[in-house]
Length: 297
Ligand code: GDP
Image (cartoon, helix red, strand yellow):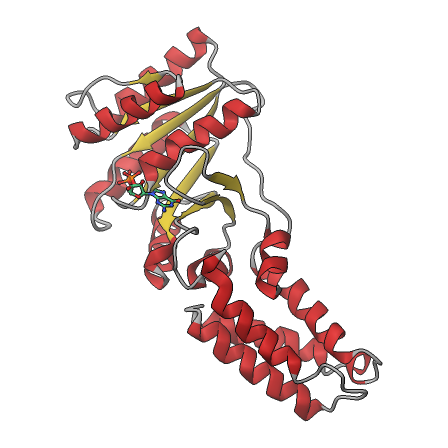
């Protein structure tokens, strides 16, 4: 992953200071922590997240356990690894599924984040898991968005429920649930409208859809390339709408990775999926432990 290469190198350089040392002092640990702190800030991790992270690691690392250890470098790396996993959400966060199908997933986000593409990718992933997805075109403001979803559906051979752009998004969503029930589709993925910026109208419409159909999952799609803006967007959507998780797209790009490392700590909501490319199979469940291992190299 190009995205964390820089951070990875910086962390390894920091740990080098401890390697081969028979005994480390509190001062040694502090020096390493300073370097990790700078590396995380340069990777665009939120300031407060970095502060809390360093505090936690330091508290554990200056404990007798490490200072008295014969392998202090490994001990510190282990602590950083564990705290990174924690920062990324601990265990993998799965989708909530409905006790009685269909499970309804609402995708929300700003225009360009990768929402429509992610809807197609998610449908594709769920189908591979034996599900019968239905894609729903509820972006009534952009005829091109409806068309884009229909094209994706054709490519994937997955049905797309659309009612054009003159029916309200709430009614489209309701109609889609009826269609799913009568056609045996057990996963309904609703592609909602995005805007260039968060505004009241957008939030109101999303709140109306949420109230009308009570989705099991509201997933916010954010673009990792937008860095801290992605984290702010997540905070706002979570405060105003309530989200259950995040799909972080464009993790295949050369973003610094700060958004991926900050969003869970800032919003309390986990990343559930990672977008790893433009292709329709480039969506992966998000595994905090694997990513932490990759970051530590
Ligand atoms: P929407 O406006 O949020 O519905 O965004 P789109 O789904 O139309 O995606 C916007 C652009 O981002 C498209 O060119 C997608 O191919 C691209 N995109 C979406 N997800 C990813 C991803 O994970 N990686 C990369 N490299 N590109 C992506």
